[in-house]
Amino acid sequence: MLFALSLICSAAQRQKVTGFFTNMHYVPEAGDVVGMEVWIVYARGNFYACVQQAQGEPEPPVVVPVEVSGTQVRFGLRGPQPLAFIGTVSKAGLALSIAGSKQPPEILKRQRSWWK
Image (spheres, helix red, strand yellow):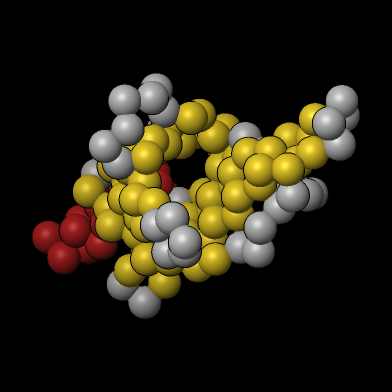
């Protein structure tokens, strides 16, 4: 009975943090696509995120491991300027910040991809 309960609790936690989150949008005046999309999934005992950023032109998406603690998530992106992100997942979306930044978090809504 306890084993079944632990499986149910574990599945419920995965459902809270998994999903598709985006604030990507088109800026007609500039002809640019800006924002970020994060798709958090669970596979083989771990969480992963497929992340795509756009600052004028969309970058290729990357898949990175995600650390999860309750509804808190943390992941990093490699590159010329490596970034570490921390966020909180809710039913409405993902409040995501660059680790150590004093800027308010970006809100990525829980919705379908901008590319739909």
